[in-house]
Image (cartoon, rainbow, N blue to C red):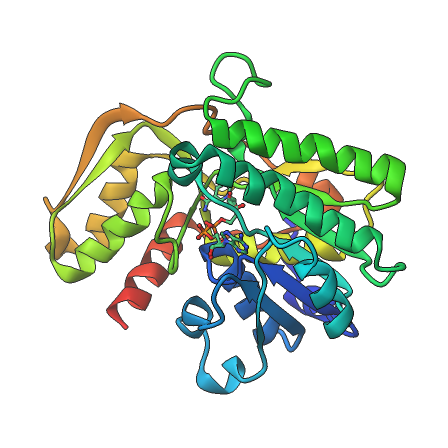
Amino acid sequence: MAQSFDIDAATAKLAGERFLVTGSEGCIGSWVVATIVRAGGSVVAGDLATTGRAVRALLDDELVERVDFVTCDITEPDAIARIVAEHGITRIVHVAALQIPFVAADPLRGADVNVLGTVRVLEAARHSGGQVRGISYASSSAVFGEEDPHRPATLYGALKACDEAIARFYARDYETPTVGLRPCVVYGPNRDQGLTSALTTALKAVVRGEAFAIPFGGKLDLQYTQDVAWTFILSALAQPDGAPVFDLHGDVVDVAHFVELVERARPDAAGLLTVGDGTLPGRLEFEDASLRAFLGELPKTPLRDGIALTLDAFEG
Ligand SMILES: NC(=O)c1ccc[n+]([C@@H]2O[C@H](COP(=O)([O-])OP(=O)(O)OC[C@H]3O[C@@H](n4cnc5c(N)ncnc54)[C@H](O)[C@@H]3O)[C@@H](O)[C@H]2O)c1
């Protein structure tokens, strides 16, 4: 019989841990915070602003009260180390970053946030005297190019590839192991920026009864926010040997089929969504056998259900 995700076992692992999530106002970060809190865990949510807007969109007021929101600018030299010390952090989920268009628009800032920011997280853990016991961080499927798997198609991908290389030396030379994860196309509530957020924007448009042109077509590996959040949490709780990096895998579908599923879920939406001729750069289909061998079974929300959950969330 196929194994399934054991949410009780995953929840039990949170006991006695105190998480820091960088980039907690973003899509993945807000879901990681919400998932930890719903599971009864303890979490400090760090981002540039402390409004908690994205986290509040996912949690009831009562649960929001359990989150500690802090200003955490990962370009500030001592910010992460200070938070780690002041809040007794034992695990870090590091997902703060600038996405493809923002790195392209400001490469210097992109490198500062996406590369030096990661080094600052690793340094804070390294100098925590063993207090930080686990780190997961977001790399990206963008580290792969189309022709040569080790030649990214974007500057953003090059910066993420740099993070993976740096993480190897922190594990080897500074006893600071990590787990790197490469999401491909994350979709669901709070996915509101970055090149591939168009699929979630399309779902928002459907709820408003508006037309929307998805600017790209072709096959993509679509990964639901909630599943991705658990994967980051379990990776931060793992005991890796070195600095392994894993591809994430959800449902590989053609964008045209995604639109068909949306129209099946909301027949009124027929004709509202169109699919562009362009395709996204880099590799877009993955599998996750090695990740599941490392972490055990992971949650897998079927695409049809993920679309329905997202539409329901946007309908409020
Ligand atoms: N969403 C995807 O499909 C996808 C795919 C591949 C990789 N990733 C990676 O996963 C991570 C999270 O993605 P996401 O979709 O949640 O991104 P997002 O853009 O929604 O969120 C990123 C967050 O980082 C914060 N941030 C930016 N600069 C910061 C700084 N200097 N200090 C602290 N916080 C800062 C932003 O305010 C934002 O809230 C990123 O590293 C991204 O590159 C995402």
